[in-house]
Length: 95
Image 1 (cartoon, one colour):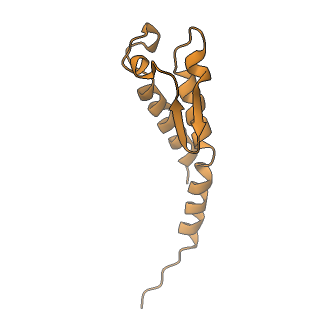
Image 2 (image 1 turned 90 degrees about the horizontal axis):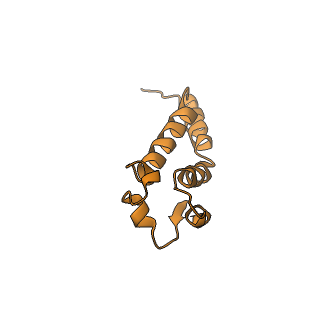
Image 3 (image 1 turned 90 degrees about the vertical axis):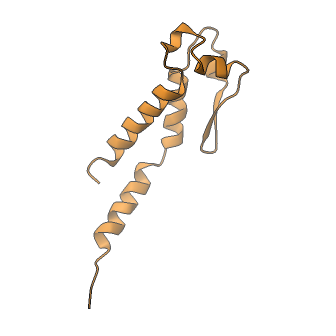
């Protein structure tokens, strides 16, 4: 007979679930901070709907394709993904 104690596993899973609460809001904030600012239109129209961050302005693809020198050749998505990964790693550390 094999016995498995899932108490520790269940505790860790609960901690992991709690760690990702608020992550969409963090992603929105990060994406806004990685968006170039001239008039503020792009940042103002970067919005969170549910768990999705939406760049709701007509030149979003141009900014992602490094049209603006303010993106420093990295676009908006790549630095945002790096920020999110660092935050997830920070939140899950020690679980």
